Length: 77
Image (cartoon, rainbow, N blue to C red; front, side, top):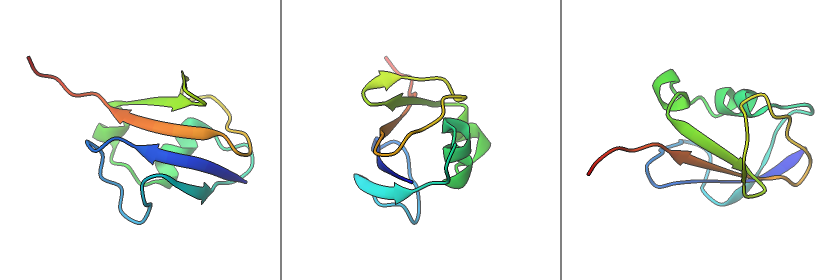
């Protein structure tokens, strides 16, 4: 199934262009997506995921044509 996929500039993902459609397996969860993207564990623990502009849990199952956005938590003052 295909989903729309984008990520903030604070995340580097090789092989997956920003603002594109990507193919994921059926019944793919957000956690499965993060593994598919080969994000290091420390990055996976520091991302917030929105699906269709709503924050979601890592156990959320993605559906065809969902819009997924990844944001990396950053700190500073």
